[in-house]
Image (cartoon, rainbow, N blue to C red; front, side, top):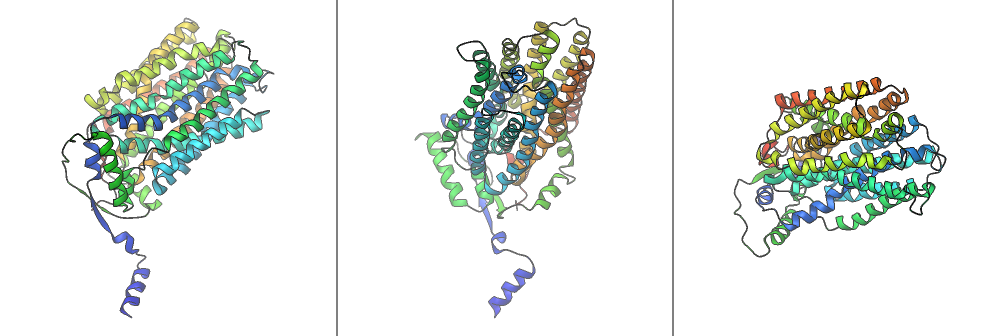
Length: 492
């Protein structure tokens, strides 16, 4: 009777005995004290390639926009091409929210396998398009997978990488987007360059290759472990400890590792974080300014990149009469510059600090973009000059954009990390990503350089506003553990 009474009391109070369990774990300090190793490099390669695929995808569509408008493609109009970009980004928004929520609930590994498979199959499907409807559906599901990748991968990367190099690694990983962009431009140059492949088939091969690469990368990801930090939240201490011991053995290779220093983390175990707790945390007095910061950074970089990069192929064709075959070569230089930006500046985010570097990169990118507007509008900037200007701008701005994802990943608690990334990615993409290509499609169709320059000016203002907000609300996380930057909700 006593036992039955206790059970009734628990049911009345809505309590679950599992939720009352607490654990003490040293998983975070053990992971952060590890030196950089070949194991980390392999893991980052398997995870970070998602940005390479995203860059490949975006650049292929930009490079092939002229072909897609021709009879050898799908006979799309300018607004339809930019609408396809909007559909892709809309899918990314839905995917980010859906898969971001599932990543925090079901684990990092399950979801970064599902999201990559979704992307790959949809991209292959795009190659078989014969009209706008099927092309749009495939673009939506391709975006769905990529949106999920942003949440699942950023959270997994930051939880597996030592805190002392987290900024450098995160920027370099996000910077691989531009490796994909460069490969996409080169692939388009070959496929559209009369090398024995007709344009009618070349654009189809381009999408088919991208999807096939994704399926191959899926095999690499099978070797990536689940995040030990996520496992400890769910009370799976034995699994977390086993994975950390395996990582320590592979990193140490029989040699002594740095001593474990720092207090153990005491956590209450829950099987998931209720949605009300997620939004309560994000809107709490402690996190309100952090939420505003994440919003501004994401909107600024999303508008900037989606406005410029998704539509650049149309710009050089409309205003400078560049042929379809020549178009990829105009995308290649600032794709290369955008990759070397994070590679060069990334380490400074750990050495100098997050706040000064994020403020500087956003501000410089905004000022440089503003400086281009008048020469472009008045016709004093030719296609080569515009390409050089954007190469310099993207060298700086690509680090700023990568830092936005790093910021959101670091400043929110472990339990809601993936969902927070998803929320701010989705908001930024809805405002800056979905809206920007559609708006710029209309600006380009107007045939007015002045109208287009005003659009670039808006992007510059958003970047400079983000720099100001970082200067005021920025959180310094360089060299710190994730748990010290933002205390877990389940900590006791």
